[in-house]
Length: 294
Ligand SMILES: Nc1ncnc2c1ncn2[C@@H]1O[C@H](COP(=O)(O)OP(=O)(O)OP(=O)(O)O)[C@@H](O)[C@H]1O
Ligand SMILES: [Mg+2]
Image 1 (cartoon, rainbow, N blue to C red):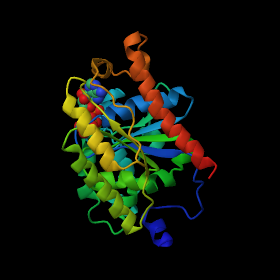
Image 2 (image 1 turned 90 degrees about the vertical axis):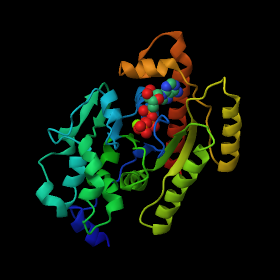
Image 3 (image 1 turned 30 degrees about the vertical axis):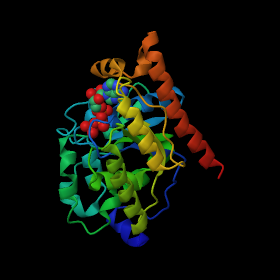
Image 4 (image 1 turned 90 degrees about the horizontal axis):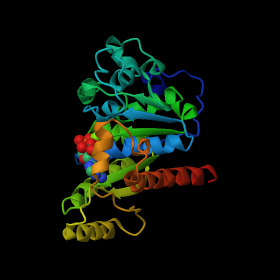
């Protein structure tokens, strides 16, 4: 199997260093729950702690790329889609000369591999290949030894449960799940866990640790929400981490309209959000450190 995958993924024979970096993804198949917002601000929080951070936008909507000021990455072939395709030898007619280092965009200290519209064709493009289609992103990260270069690779996922998300799950060491606490969320989370279970059953890859569930867009005036949140937390079980909810905050909208993280504002009104994102970063770094001593 190893040998076959080596051929499939155009991998050199020599063993590549695996590195200590961790792949962290923000996932929920439901749209508009705050995946991109959380990925963007958490990446900044990690980077401010001195970590070397790469963001990979795995959503064809390319919202994360946009927040980092990158548009139209598809046209010049400098997109994560092209890099993933380049890593599959069978698809050599579709290859375009690009190394991952050519595709990196930089925003301050954070590196970004942007997405474009082309990513929406991922599932169809790889449909006919003979290798394991679920492991393309994981192999891409391994082939380029990205975990030796970065402390954290932060991935923003699309609002689906298709092959892109399966690739993200197979590549991730840790996952964080933002959700809106309403009566439908629990159903959505159940689906998400079912996919995790399926991946586990297929035994093709380790499944990520779910580091936190993040209630988002809470409105203190709606009492029903806190009841729904309690119900969801109870269903998830006592082992599940459910962090302090993020309220619906105009500051987050303001930050995003200026393509800035909450840490780029000095005013007092941003302090609670800064603390909350620092807390998310702390959950991630504490978890990573624990793993180092296992
Ligand atoms: N706590 C919050 N307070 C106010 N606005 C928020 C908050 N969280 C997210 N938003 C806003 O809600 C919208 C959806 O957030 P975001 O794009 O992060 O969700 P998403 O899960 O990535 O969506 P999609 O599934 O479409 O990718 C954005 O306009 C964002 O600015
Ligand atoms: Mg998004």
